[in-house]
Length: 152
Image 1 (cartoon, rainbow, N blue to C red):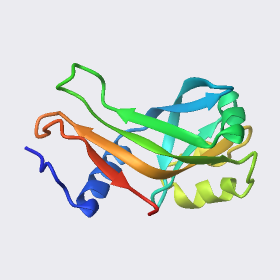
Image 2: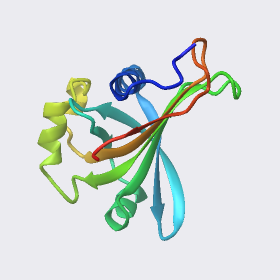
Image 3: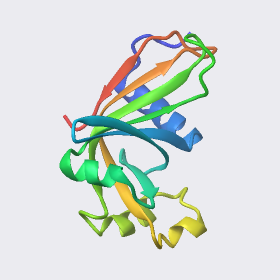
Image 4: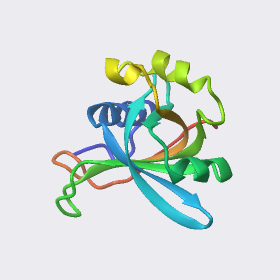
């Protein structure tokens, strides 16, 4: 069984190991008071930031108006007792607001493939996490939600 009260360092390591093992998630934004969720492929940076490459869409307009986002990354849902995942709550900025994010993603994300490294026609979303909720109810997990607060 997983320790119900992990240290902050252990929790952060488990979260980043999990994020490194996965590739896709769902990015929630809010546009004109309407929540929406978009499937995305993400790339963990060297620090705690997370990067998303995208061709565009309403999520960029939503982030420009409201930078609060949530990235959900989880294993396939089997049932309430067989799932593992994280919810990353934080602020987002896009390359439409800050063009230096193109260079930053190339430097920070070692998992960006050569074809993606060109970044032609793509935009970048950078998530600066503030709080991450971690749940593990697989095998050695005990369904205890762990919360990691960042940037305090």
